[in-house]
Length: 275
Image 1 (tube, rainbow, N blue to C red):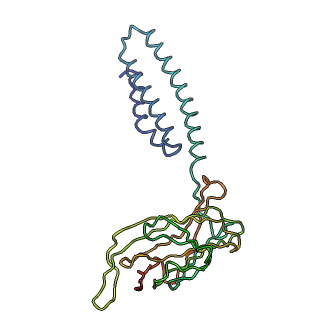
Image 2: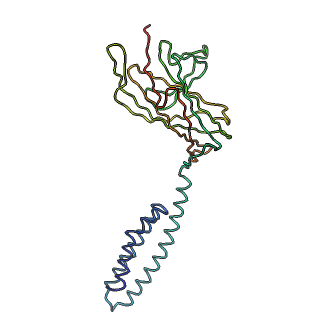
Image 3: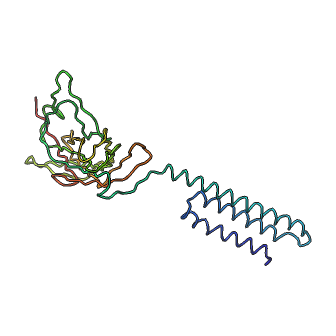
């Protein structure tokens, strides 16, 4: 086997294995560039190996061309890979989990409330029909005292209070939760129990205000079921996301959850009284 053939097979072998290591160290773009360069050089060496020995000048020119393109390709690949890595690093969200001693420390406490709930002004609640996130209910300006979810309803809901106990305000807080609607199985004696899960959701609770430091400016929202024939489980996570002033600078923060009836929250079906 000629020297050119050995070089050709060697570059092809590197092209099959080396990009995997480059992908782990530098990312997929530099790995693809390296694979393309190695395969092109390997094919070129194999072509050179099959040239007739009498055409030495042609072979020598081809070797010079291979060398020049290898240097140019390697330099271009390194430059493109560095630029792509820098852009990806800039745009990628930062999700470093903070410790309890961090500048932002979040807690979420959920206790039970009896329905209907009297309120004044505005009330934020987790919409549990389509489970898309938070919604706001505003009372009539002429009569600011309202009842949630409505007048002729009885049952149990939850009041959830989110606080920041850290030393700096928390902006753009979002909480990803999991929700499951279960079938409601009623007994002949009027009792009921939850059945199989029939629908699953992953709503994002986006807090519409900054949370002040050391427990100031907490945010309160409420949860109840509007469907008398379904039982809902709301699973609260142990983390939340804080965007700060820059939405691309997303940080994952520990969330301490305390719930009266445990986690997941059991959202009982409501009962509507006849009018």
